[in-house]
Image (cartoon, rainbow over all chains, first blue to last red; front, top):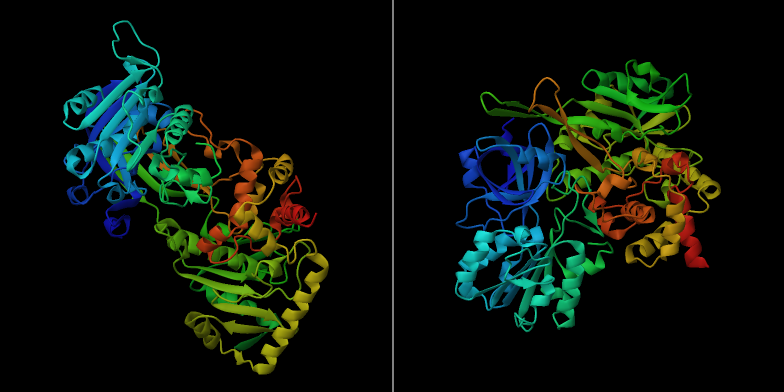
Amino acid sequence: MNKEMTNFVNGKIVNIPEVATIEEIRDEIREVKTFYMSIDNKDIWQNFKFKSGQFIMCTVFGAGEFAVSLPPSPENDRFHITVRTVGKVTGALHALKPGDKVGIRGPFGNGFPFEDFKGKNLIYVAGGIGLIPLRSSIVHVLQHKKDFGRVLVLHGARTPDDLMYKENLKQWQGFEGFETYITVDVPTPGWTGETGFVHTLFDKANLPIENTVAFVCGPPVMFNTVIAELMKRGLGDECIYSTLERHMKCGVGKCQHCAVGRTLVCTDGPVYTFRQIKTLGEVI
Amino acid sequence: MFLIRKSEVLRLAEELSKEYEVYGPMIEKSSGQTFFEKAGDISDVNLMAPIPSTPPKIVVFPQIERIVSYKHDRQKNAVSIDPDYRVTPKALFGLRPCDLAGILCLDRFFLGQEFIDEFYRSHRRKMFIVTNTCVAPFKQCFCVCTDSGPSAAEGYDLNLTDLGDEYLVEAGSDAGKALAERLGLQAAGAEHLAEKKLRVDRSIAMFEDIAVDSKAWISRVMNRVTTGFIREEVWEYIGNQCFECGACTFVCPSCSCFNVVDVKDPACDGCADRLRSWDSCSYEGYSRMAGGHNPRKPVEDRRNKRFFCKLSYSQMKKYLRPGCVGCGRCAWVCPGDIGLPNVVTYIRREITE
């Protein structure tokens, strides 16, 4: 049986992982690394296309498979994943070195509906490593800035050492029309920036509300505070987007581990509006 | 339509065994329980046996199976990945209509959604199905309430109905018709079909006494489960009785949640078999993520997930029928007495009181 025939469908690697090679590994913050990689099969690699907000299933050979969001922009960006070591499989991934092999299935999930965002102001609110799944969308917008209104990136982390993608943040700050605000909960000696939770930046940022879409990603407690604050300021629940994280085994709507309400995060998500999230009847 | 004498009905299975591995209901001598298993000896297959203890879904969706094996040669830095698509021609002989309905649910779920599950498909390829009409229900049955019996309507190659001295043999596919003709079975007439209808009607009438509580309430309860108008206390009451043993999901003909693990080869560092095995939404660890965050905590939250799967319109859209097939096995095995008919009763009480 020709594996590609049944396994690579509509640009997606469905059942059997494709072998990929890790090209470079960068330390981001404590316990978080970025892995640059490419799929070995050239035909599949050329046809491997994804959208902002989608995810892949990554196999670490001998350890298992995990779901991970895609931080690169779909265009003109080096393919990579950014992973925090939280368990057995991500721990095994962190032990790998450049040149080592991993497996990739996907891309899966719905992604952000960018067509709906044209001409609008965009607010990105990211807590800690919540910036990882939003990075793809941010870079995509940076590449197409003229299609959007004001673009604000608000990033909060526990300490200055926990700020994600520091190099990117610096680049984005210098990019015309991009407004980047950063804060930390707990300052360290030498920190001259803002202190406080990420929603305390809202006033300083003079947050737009009319014709605006917000993207929120971060730990549950931050998520709830930020959403409440955004809605208090008048943003509708249908204008607030987030990507949900769930335990996943198959990524293709079969194992049911990621069932939330009547939806599956892997095929109906992971991108939801807050209006949808409210109907799911489950905690974030 | 054909007829076959009762004493000769296993000729069909014998003929099938030339081409297929034959699975059928057999009574285990030591326990007296019925199991639906591969028949080493066709004469062990027993069409009069009660509904099997475990659903025949184990043939198309095994409790545990290898889906992929991979070898990582660290020295050469090369990986080979081999999927395990096992296509063995199999015949399911004497399947009860509820269990066929369960397999049709699995078909629509694994094959009819956005992605096709190739591992499931390899089991379903080259399969021959012979169903057996239930001319009398068993005591836990309520298939009349879930539109899945006592007589199969679709999805079989041959359907058998006990008419007393002989079986009515109805062909549901070209392959079924060809088999009946190959064996030179006698043709059946309109009177035999009328006799079948009589016996099916009689069987349905017998449900009056056994499916009392759940009967006619399933659709009202489905409405409630779908719209979410069920008080938290009802789910709490149900959840409080759940032992989180997972038995209901394992005996359910339409439950299909699975877990995937890579089991390492101790002799080879990067080599493993990727196994998938039945999982249950009642387990606490089912939705727990690496790092310990678990969005589904209380047991009643997990319980209502399962009944949402069995009794909701949104799930019906995936299965094109209710997720519950009325076999009653969950009621049979549940140590907490919250099999599906009882859950229907608890929700019904809330509606009526």
